[in-house]
Image (cartoon, rainbow, N blue to C red; front, side, top):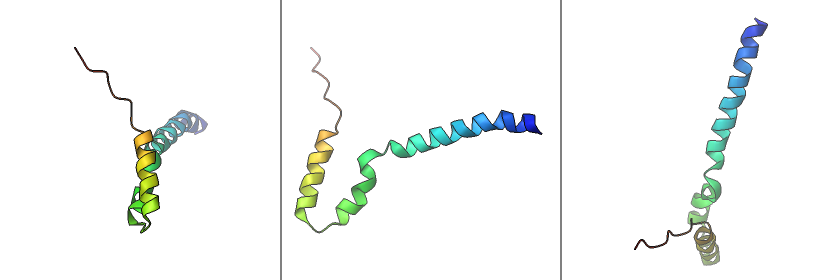
Length: 63
């Protein structure tokens, strides 16, 4: 049965790595609900600045 464990162990590690990478890809947006429910305007302004700074760069115009 050791061979069975040696076969599935790397697959399990790969599965965990891929699954955890998916959660990390959400980045700062995991805080969105907390920010949305916050009553302070300062928090909303800081959030908008943070979101604007994380947008992908715009593509240059074609033509």
